[in-house]
Amino acid sequence: MARDLTRINERARNKPKERFTSIYHLMSGPEELRAGYEAIDGAAAPGIDGVTKEEYGKELESNLQSLSDRLKEMSYRPKPVRRTYIPKPGSNKKRPLGMPCLEDKVVQNAVRAVLEQIYEAYFEKSSYGYRPGRTQHGALDELGRTIQQKKVNYVVEADIKGFFDHVNQEWLMKFLEHRIGDKRVLRLIVRILKSGIMEDGMVRASDEGVPQGGSLSPLLSNIYLHYVLDLWFEHRFKKGCRGEAYYFRYADDYLACFQYKEEAERFLTEMKERLEKFHLEIEPGKTKLMEFGRFAEESTRRCGREPEQFDFLGFTHYCGKTRNGHFKVKRKTSKKKFRAKLREAKEWLKKERSHLKRGELLLRAKQKLDGHLNYYAITDNGRECANFRHQMERLLNRWLNRQSQRDSDPWERVKAALNWVKWPSVRIKHNLDPFRRESA
Image (cartoon, rainbow, N blue to C red; front, side, top):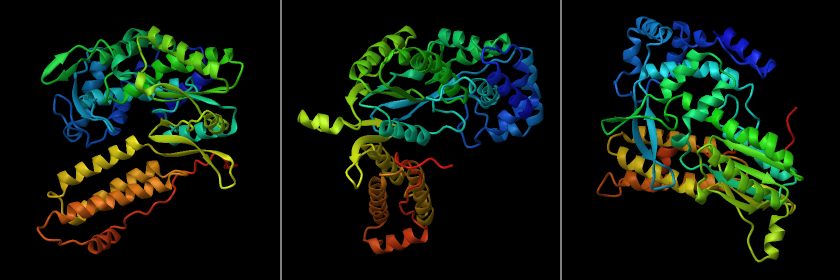
């Protein structure tokens, strides 16, 4: 299977205009489905049928053969996605989360494995979200170096309103047909999109959007925005700019950098019109044009204003200085994310402190802090990371002491317990210094 996928990728790269007319067999055989099954997280919540990975695996061979036969006969029908809502970090709103049935996850994994090999050959370098080998830190690094080293004076920060729920399925299928000529693959994707949503025991049709929670949704979303925004910016809008222009996208969060204000303003106008053509609209509160870059600090202060800042991928970007007084792009954890992560830790402690033994509670708290530092411990953000670590310690001290009527666990004892679990110190894990030299 791996060899077949490699050949598909090579064909896509060598023949950029080719349509793939015979790839259904690469996602419908028992071996391909087995790989899709193995990629599933066994701890994930089940769909509406309640089948877990462990249960499905008890008769794995016969289950996969049956699924393969139904796919080949085109009699396979995905079940509705069970929808639930989870808190949205930094907001009172809730984020919809879809939970497909296990068998549908197997199929989506198999489809994604093939389509990913095709579309990775076509996607633009400006796209970072949910792609193999491309990360949020990679996007942050390239953005910081671009603002630091290129002629950037203005930044347009943008966000699409309810993107995953408003993807136009007709346009998505038209985009897919540019590269996919196998009618069986297209029919299968339509069935996945139209499988429906179960919410509060009621099933409703899904004529719009892509079902969140499945492994195929991020790829389909990237394909949609590849045609709607990425290609448009890189091959049409940018060519009409007299100054420098750059664009970065991670899933539905994106921003653009410009040398001249009039081109930033034109982008803001034309980008809105472009989105409307494909049934999308921007989130007004998260979309703005600001002066940012090497000369922004001097320019804004002449007008009696502080230099503006913007948030991207959980970090606030601001105009800073090196020790020698030179301009430097700096980043820190955004206040919104900091508060949300701290609130999340507080709720977790409140829920688990009476269920877990003290040692287990501390070990899990350590894992949560490790997870935070693994993402946020970047160049220039050490102070915010140390503050988050300190706030976690305060929460632990407070909640552990509430387990008793008296002060049974003073701070010194908590400190000893943190040393016992090897409480992590703050170390920079991602060097995103925009001045650093590229390694050879």
